Length: 114
Length: 109
Image (cartoon, rainbow over all chains, first blue to last red):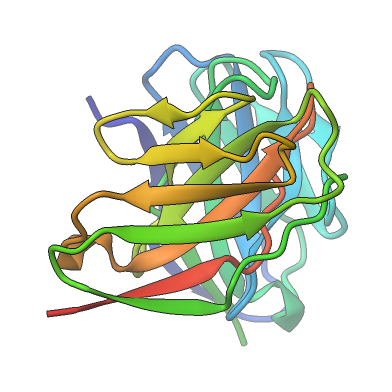
């Protein structure tokens, strides 16, 4: 049982390059989330998908786009990377987007933009 | 959103109980209290959550004050693998998890 799988684990981009971070879950969860974590800070929500076919902005959506490809997969795209997007990105999933259910997180993608 | 206050850091000896406090004085009557932890270089991990009464699971216990303005996560017998940042997160309805900076727990061998 893999849980939440994120690829790649590490990535270095040049300013202005684009890339897509991939996330897949095998727990039949309905809701998925993308967070970023900057050094010494808590996680901040970028985008989420309450269910297949829906996506919504979180706290820090600027510079990102997302796609809920199917129930299992939720990707995060950086169209034109900036140094301010250097961070660790975490994907998570939950059974449903309510307070009763816990989230399962992936191990993260460490992104550096130079 | 309910605001939380946690100590920045705590230390505990290995094999002793650890009590991690959290104040959430602005919590509403229907906010669940979630606890997560983040081990070094890993994503957060769900620990436990509760609403009013105390809760136990294989990882920890959660003691919730009667007025719900504070809670305490209890690790009954700390091991070196429990060294992590612990986050206390009140959640209401369809709100998403909002992480503060948590408490960094150091376990002393």
